[in-house]
Image 1: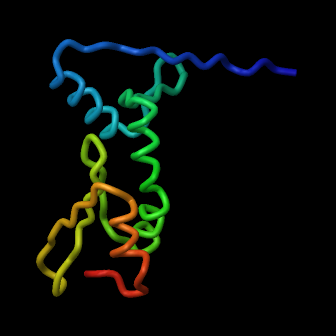
Image 2: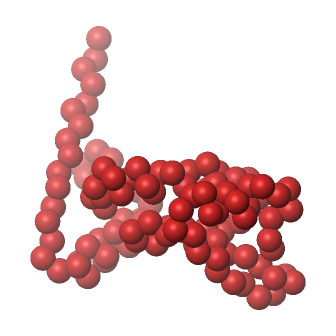
Length: 113
C-alpha cells in the first residue's frame, strides 16, 4: 500500500502588511502553485473565532452562487453583495452578520437586483 504524502503547515510571519497582501494576491492570481511537483496552498491565518464568524456566511454565500450574484468578504468579517440595478448600475450592500444577509436575501424568492 503506497504511503500518503505528508502534509505540512508552514506559518510565515511577515513584518510588512503589504508583503502579505502581495503574496495573497499573487497566489490567488496564479490559481495553482507547485514546487518540485508538490501543490502549495497559501491562506491567511485567522483566529478560530474569526474563522467561525466568516464561515457563518457560508449558507447565504451558497445561495448567492446559485443566483449568480457577486459577493466577497471584507476583513475582518463583512459580507459585501454586488447588486445590479436596472441592468447598468452596481451597488454594494454590506452585512456584518449572516442573519442580516439572510433576512434580506434568503427570505424572498426575488432578491434585490
